[in-house]
Amino acid sequence: AAYLLTAIVCRELLVEYNAFNNIRHRYLLSKESHLRTVLVSNIPRHLRSAKKITTYFKHVYPEAVKSVSICQNLIRLEKLVVKRTAVLAQIEKELLLLCRNEKRKLVGQSRLEKFQLKLSFWNFLEKLVCCDGRL
Image (cartoon, rainbow, N blue to C red; front, side, top):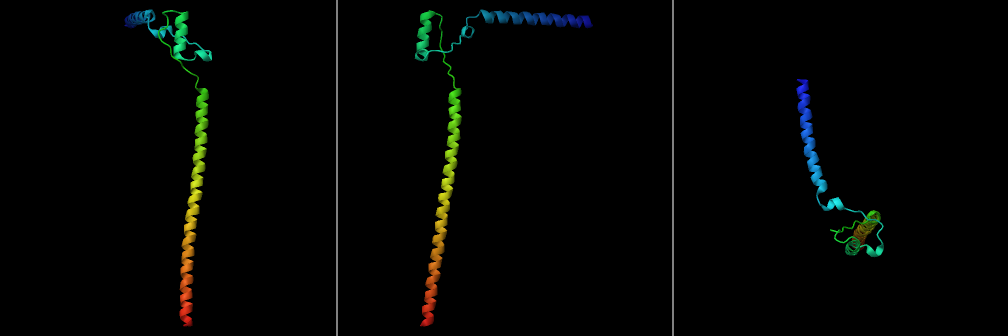
């Protein structure tokens, strides 16, 4: 029974390997663009556009260029975005503190005004009582 099971497993492995091998050969023999992708780095500044690179490579390798994609190094930009976010957070924090301080000043003034109004009202009543007492 063990020999029979081993033979069945080996046969299935061989069938699957042949299927995989056929698919792989068809894939490698296809004329898809992903099989002809070329990474070019250190491109001069005056050629850093898709149109200019396409023109250049079509001149150097006629009928070989299907499309051009440009990937830029965004590490510097990402660092600037992080820095901008930090500065923006600091500005928002300072604005919040400024608003809080101004609100406190306004609330403090209104309390002071209320206190002064009450004080003047009591002073007025006191004068009235004093005047009435004299009369």
